[in-house]
Length: 316
Length: 243
Image 1 (spheres, one colour):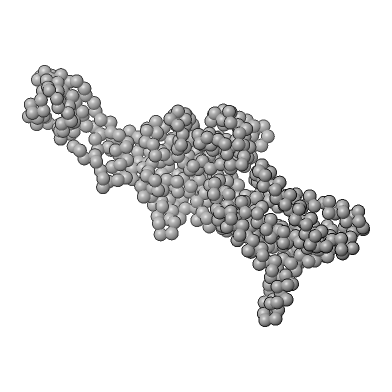
Image 2: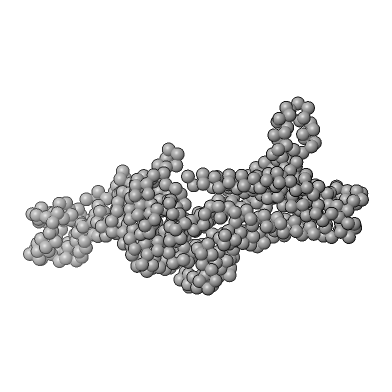
């Protein structure tokens, strides 16, 4: 549905987006991550056809965005950053204006407007002036505008920015639900959102794609991903160390907490460490109080990738 | 065509949803009345025509048209709604024309409300209605030309005040370069080709015919090409914003 090839944008000497390529199919939700100023919004503006790229190609539903602007624009629903809205209109007036620009008139317009009003919970403020809306409602009004023509492709620039936790949850489930039969790209700063709503995620930094994969794949790249945190009773750290040294699949070990006869340690495996560990514990009659395998945190991956100099994941 | 109408209707709605429209119309009517009767000496002339009415229009438009048009694109740039508008399936030309026509219709409404003036002369004497009509036509064209200039200046900046001032300066230039009191001074030292050149682009020379009831196709062409030129410049500026 969306294909981006070698997209580049420079503002004067500054390279805002540097040679990025990606594709999103129907049924996929792509999360766009990156620090502020990484080029997320610029990329999205080029995909929607608002900014012309300096080099590279964007095609939406098989058509080039520059060659067939009206055709591709009519297939895209776009929520710009900060959800801009004409402040002198009512919510209803704004939505009918957008519906008409999308080529919906008469009963089709009414049907489309009613549907998005219901979807985005705008009924209570329908005839209120946009000026007087709270930030959450403004955002939802602008989101409603992006959905009004039931587009195949949705580009959402920080759709949950400025919403309260309940509204964030609603927005996320809305995105996930719509992702089943649309191609969606959305950008965010909130990493849990990527895990909650995306099928694929991209991290971009200084205009370049630095990581791409499913949320699970990205998490596996965390420095601590796959390490075993174990709590044992009936052994001291001193007594534990020689036993650990005998293990074949252990790369590194680190003491987390020690008190009385309890030890909590983080172990980095090189292979099937877990059976080995459990067997030793069984033989020595240590009680295993807790055992977790660290899945890795997206926050850590994000930090490690976008700020390699201040990497703090090397605690092992 | 339908999209141009949608955009124009939204813009017109924006004028009338705030007090600005009503304030503007009232001030426009008060000023036309004041200039016609007090400064223009409508009654002293003893003639049943609207010359003292039309002669002031370029000077009124000099300030009032930039005031009407300054928000057209500046507001879009300031609010960021331009991103919304230009990612809709509309061409930039549809957006430019829609906005321009909305403001022009608004100015037309204000001008139409000066109809008591026509009734007054018709009551007092037997005016030449052809002249009245051509005077109104010229007035509409001047407001359109000034409006196109304001469209361009408002596309330049997100600041409405800057857009207003720039537009007033350009419009003032177009008035002064063929306004007799100025040309009479300049004629002493400037070469003839320069004077003629400036007179050619000045709005006053081209407006004069309309006031006398003479519709010259060259004057008509002048105003239409000024409108076309500045709207084209607007489209270039809007494209440059994005590139």
